[in-house]
Length: 228
Image (cartoon, rainbow, N blue to C red; front, side, top):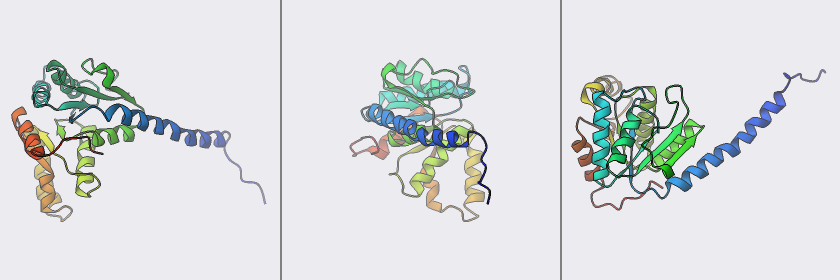
């Protein structure tokens, strides 16, 4: 019987995969240590491609301002577009401004509105996503693309399956989100793939005041702390 042949360097690749575990662990440890002391924060999501003069950018700035005025810090993905707007609103209002940064084609550099001691860099999407959920008291979801939808549906799934405690998920922009919500109600629900109560996982609003009202109402009478 002939010995099994492997491509040149296969064992080296396998070894590198194993060592990656330590890099992943390092990202988790660094994230946990830095974010465990930030206080109550809301994650703001949205497109990295939204320009500064776009109404949704301006709306995201105002949402972040209102959140910081109400005593909440703001966490974003640290990039441009809506993320920059979220950090900008918090920064302009003297609030906590956190950036969970990752290098992507449309996000070449971190935005300048992140607190210097609250800027974290990640190589792994899944580690970064854990940080968003673990250290947020709510998700504010502005118009965005695949990444925004990824964060939205992951949070909905985790709450739906009781893997994490419930927190507010707020879609901002009726014009943008109403088509998705209509499809969820008329197609997904009617097909029996979700239950009626799952529709209560998200709120659809248009103003910064509505965002703060929903978050405040959810936590009224509760002692706010990170989700761990």
